[in-house]
Image 1 (tube, rainbow, N blue to C red):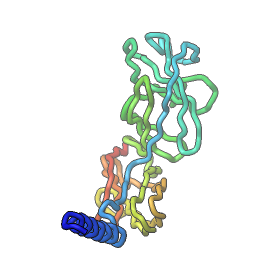
Image 2: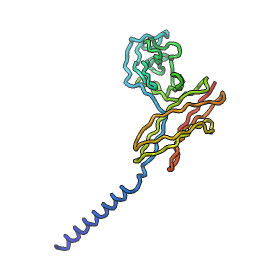
Image 3: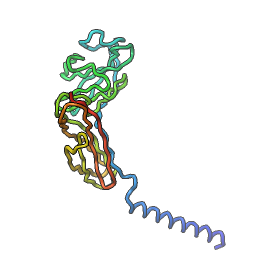
Image 4: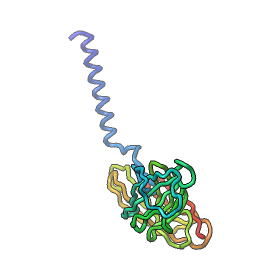
Length: 226
């Protein structure tokens, strides 16, 4: 074996040893990319279709005469929705949700609803996050309430490679309200909820915090009890 061959094979063996060490260390050390993802539960009405065949009780319900129609599932209940250009031609800023499923739109309490408007389905509070001719996005928390108690929804997703016991805290105005433990499997996503109680009328900050040994995550919103 000549000198060049010796150098080549020595370099190859050394490279294989380094590669083996890298694989071993990667497999025995916990991933730095392990983390918890926390966000509000949202509901989306997508793939809205244009139609002029809508029974809407509002006079001049659409400037163009063309509605965007679809459906949305809110906490397990499917509702028909319309999006309409009520004020300006082809500016789709309002939605009506057919809560009683009678195919008559924009009846009392069904809308028209715009961004930041609040509504309830049973005790579940919802907030209109976005209205457009393409979709309606609704978040599972309210902005304005007249009642003391309501339910909000959120999502916890684990990006850990092993099971994890997660401490979840609900606070109102920085005061501990409720706490629970969620056990998540590796890479599991769980939809959960809390019942919120607002002690007084006025503006309140509601916050959800998840706690692990690596740190905390939190999401919050402001709600006005009138």
